[in-house]
Structure formats: C-alpha cells, structure tokens
Image (tube, rainbow, N blue to C red):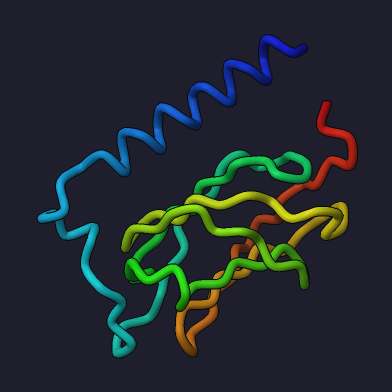
Length: 123
C-alpha cells in the first residue's frame, strides 16, 4: 500500500514540476481578468487526507496568490503556487468527509460538481 502512495506522490510532483517549469511568456501566466468568468476543469487526486498535495485545473485564476482562495466545505486550503490555469495546494485538516471544492478569485466564485473525498487517516 505504501508503494502505491509513493508512486502517486511522485506522479503529482512530476506533473506539477512540468507545469510550473514552463517559460513566463506563455499564455498560462496571464493575469486574472475580472471581466471574464473563472472556470474549473478538474482536480486531482480525488481523495486524500490532511496536507495532501492537490492540483486544480481551470482558467482565469491569474498569478496573484493573495487574490485566490480555495475551500473544502468551509475550510480554507493553503495555496502553494498558482498559474493562470493551475492551482497547487494542500488539503486542510478535517474539512468533512465529502467536500465541496470551491475556488474564489477576486469577487468571483466557482465550485466543482464532483466532491473531494476526505480520508481521516491517510497513512
């Protein structure tokens, strides 16, 4: 079981490294445009516990971490890094078993239709 978790962790780190290693001249680094809606595409992993590293994909997030908040039910997550189309974060402690994932950028808010499954003991 631990080898599977290790492989998942390595895959997530590799994906995030590839995403964030692209040059700054890409369209993915553009700033948040309040005249356009934010959109959510996907998040992974779909389950995990406290401090699980998660990636959210979408559009129009911008690059200013101070303008972005991600909630699991009512608990705010710690955002590690952001690009206009990717948010990299840590899952908060004990947000509930079946979590609605909500992203707020500026005055806009969007939520996923699929829920994140919180696992109390992710060992």
